[in-house]
Length: 109
Image: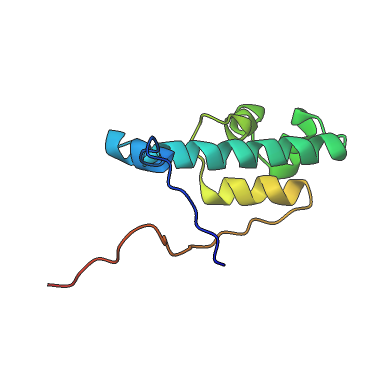
């Protein structure tokens, strides 16, 4: 006998849908990604026992620039700076695009 799943009548749209309706989905997604990257860099710095001064020297940049890289709310970090930061802690950056399975493909007129 097949098991049937009850649908919750009180269930609404997803949180992603809510953010999209408010027009902030992309910003929230970018902030979450930046927070994750900043945390990974800080964890790598702690594991390698690197101070911010040493890290900035390895990146050949200023400490204030490093602070911007590590600031989870600062979204204006250039890709080359992120790559330098990752390299300074012995890591690499991997970026890829994924198909958004929740969106319908655009129609061609």
